[in-house]
Image (tube, rainbow, N blue to C red; front, side, top):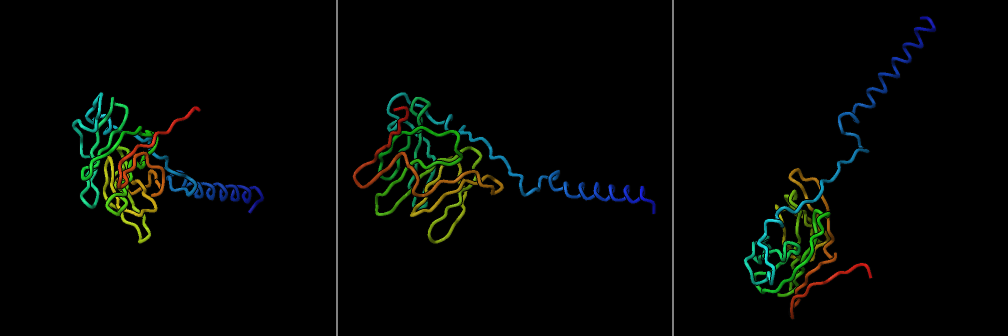
Length: 191
């Protein structure tokens, strides 16, 4: 075999090896490629009944149900604030939604000797994975969820089981209910 033929064979082998090595990238199965997370949307919030006054006494929609039967009712104050009311004990408050997050905690109820965490979900969330000290479970959830704790974390999942976001069970909760009353935490910036 001539020197020229050897060079051509060597270059052909390198070209084939490069082509074979690049096939996973073309197919989208490269380990370094990550799927972009969808942008959060809350169209369900835009369909809630709107009140210009006290939404806690106006018509509300059942947003979620907890395992113990407690229901989370929701309405909108001026189309800007999400207002929540708990069915068994009453009480509640209003909060702003962070429209950039797929999952966020909304309320924590520590009455009746147990901790009940409520959260809201973006439109594309179809289930939540709940992690506690005794293991984890996945259950269907849309718009909102209620879980009885103590909870380590809650992860939002899309219809294919992909993770969209997560919150810690001891994370910031804008609304809380304790044996005495319910309260809303107001956050401010720019001071």
